[in-house]
Image 1 (cartoon, one colour):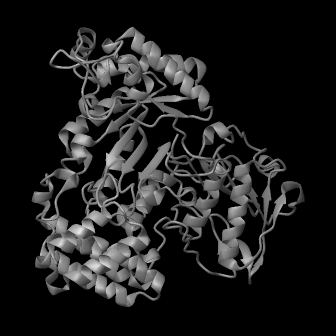
Image 2 (image 1 turned 60 degrees about the vertical axis):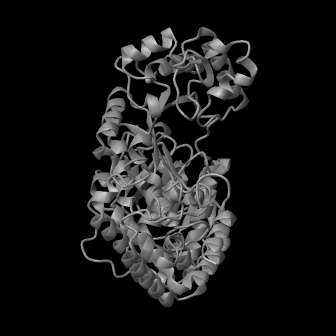
Image 3 (image 1 turned 180 degrees about the vertical axis):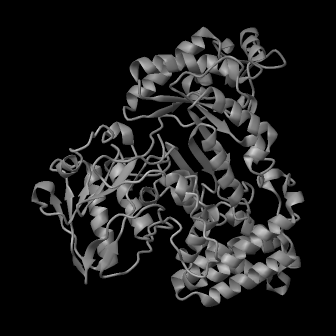
Length: 615
């Protein structure tokens, strides 16, 4: 279920999701605008606060859930930030009259819906995270699904109707108005993606994740706030399920037969009955140890390789893919899991040799296919995935045979985390393409070991697109820039336009750049002219910054340009190399940048090399 539906007895609209796609602003941005503003018919005018005094109270059920309490507390907190008013949180029995904001499944909500069939007013309809915003007789109703739904209803109102923002970390951008009048757009929404994972370190903050409605395993959302999607094992789990140090010496036949006729610890023999038994027992044991687990991975080890024994090869040959023998094991494990843990999903990888879907074998209903864009985005990082024939075929193929697809996408230069990366439009297109082909989860792997290129912007924009893929990516980008960079926003916006224009000018070289997603810093599009223009814009942005906070945000955003200069040496820095290097180090240490490339921390190593190369 996705989008909107009428809520009996409440003022609601239909078609909200479809209308959101029309929110693109035609005129140029010259100030901040609310790119998240809901489209559709507005409800009646509600004055929540007048001259710094609350005109409404917040009501919660007599037996509230922890999520109801969190929703009410956060709403009171942010309304106080907006208006200066203290909003009382009352048990519903004490909240009389109509000037009430009803949070959660209150009796007041039940009464409001009595006159019409209330069949849709069930937690099942809203699932874990869906929400409803409704108005009736002056009362504002905010409620939702059993986990994070009521909290998301509150943040939808705050963000979309009232213009509040939580762009990065613990920061907030809250409009100030002692008299707060709003005409909320009544609506309901259930996100199509049940897993939304902008896999950047900046998105691991639990408070930020809650504010921006992501639910990744890596996000530390507290359990009393509704928690996050809980994995028992995340990925590449064969060695965990059937440890080679325990079994290989005595039972080499448990492991793959390679092309030289030798048994290798690299992968399992997935058709061996004893392997299936051990893997199943290991999976069930782990699930018993993790009673809150929602997903467990039964997936190949990293690095490729597949078993060529007669049984595995016969299945793979018949199915036209190495995914055939893999699913033979995964389905057997999933069958046992379903009997004891009917709500747990068994995840496996469509990755490297297993990307192609099988001809006849089908994943069980409780199996999720985590399809990786590896061969696509690694070689074509700036091209939408749907435009790469091989991946398009894999995506549409899996989507045609299964409705539980989770995507692992890649969106950063893993050899140069700070490097300019003009691919936000491509990632936005990817997310929409994935959802159109039965994806239920999306992970965008970026700078997960620390700060990276425009990482704060990326996290926020990707989070909004994962929540609602119909959003306009350009408007989201501008919303962030004009809301986060204050008076420096015009120059930052112009830099983003410059980066996109430069990428378009060099589109041919970026179709399949040297080293793919790990492209080097002498890439054709990283010209001295581009760097010089970028520096002019960042000089302007720093001069426009109204305070040290904004100036430091600009400096962090500028780091990719300085990084390219240092990589290219005095050709791009002239006599200012020592000053740029010193400034880069200062900013990098201030923001906690320790990893220049994927792997172990290497900032000190990089700084040393730069200093030695240009004494």
